[in-house]
Structures are given as structure tokens and as C-alpha cells.
Length: 208
Image 1 (tube, rainbow, N blue to C red):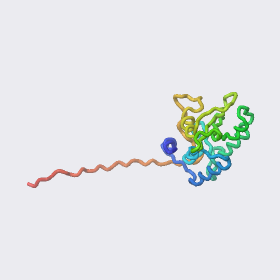
Image 2 (image 1 turned 90 degrees about the horizontal axis):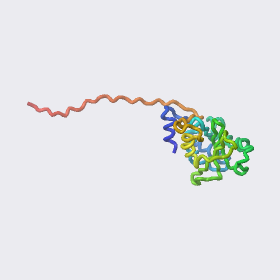
Image 3 (image 1 turned 135 degrees about the vertical axis):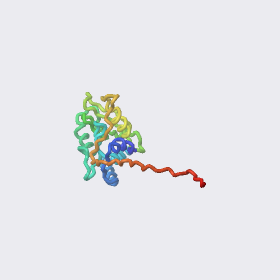
Image 4 (image 1 turned 90 degrees about the vertical axis):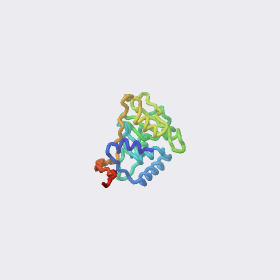
């Protein structure tokens, strides 16, 4: 699902992401789902497998489940969810207590905004996709605003697209991903010049 984007944002820049083993990523996602009591979106799980946590479009921080020996992007997914449910939503009169319980913060921005899955608003039950809302830091009174209907749309249309509406529509966000996991430089193979080959002599010789 994300291989083409990885090629564009990482591989085309001459880097390769050093990922945990697939089994470790799967186990971390499963632990997070158990702690949260919900299934995480398929597109999010695939994104973590491909990219891991990091900063997308120079603005959006995407959090992932904690994996031993691999860096989180400041905090892991469960820490982010807990922090916003316990502290970040404190005093938000526009959000009912019942809704706070089903809002899972998976992304924040460098501007102080927070992006949530609303697990009570299922958009695709087969792929476990939920509506995504943002609580903007600079809008008063603060209220939840719908951003996307899936994590895939959030990445492509928001993080790497229109942003939160305050960016120059002509230039758009920077098309880059800054991973929490380590990168290694990949040496690009230089194309070898083919040795000139002599065409076979197809002329017929006639004996005199």
C-alpha cells in the first residue's frame, strides 16, 4: 500500500530505513490494540511497517507503538493517547466525556494541533478505518473538525496535501518524511558503459 510513497520519500533520496523485524512490528501493533481495546486501521498498520513513526510533510508527527531498541518519535502511540485523554481534553466543553473515551490521538503537529481517530465513527468496518478529526490549537472556541475518512486519506490528502488549511495552496507542504528509526545511505550503482562490440562481418568472400 505504501511502497510507492516509500520509494518517493525515502529511497529516491538515497536512503534505506532500518526497520525492526516484521514479527516485532506485528507484536507491537497487537499489544497496542489490546491496550486500546480496538482494532487499528489496516492502512495505519501498513504505514508503520513501511515507515515507522516520524514527521510527515514537515508538520505532522505520526506516532507508532513502542518497539524495544527502536526509537519512538518523542512518545509512543499509547502514551500519546493517554496524555490527550487525561490532560489534553481537560476543559474541552465541546467534547462529551463519552466521546473523549473513543477519541484516540495518533498524531500531533508542530503547531500544537492534535489529530484523532473517532473509533465510534467507523467508515470501513472491514479495514477498521475511522473518521479522523483535528483539535486545532489556534482556533477559538476549540472544537473538533473532520479531516479525513481514513488514515490513507489523512496521509495523502492532509499531511502531504492541503494540510490544515493554512498553507499556500500553490506550494503545498514539503514532500518528505523524517523517521524516528535510523536510516542508512544506499550507494547508487553506477551504470557501467557497455564495451563497444564489433559487428560480425557478414560479407561473403568470393574466391577468385
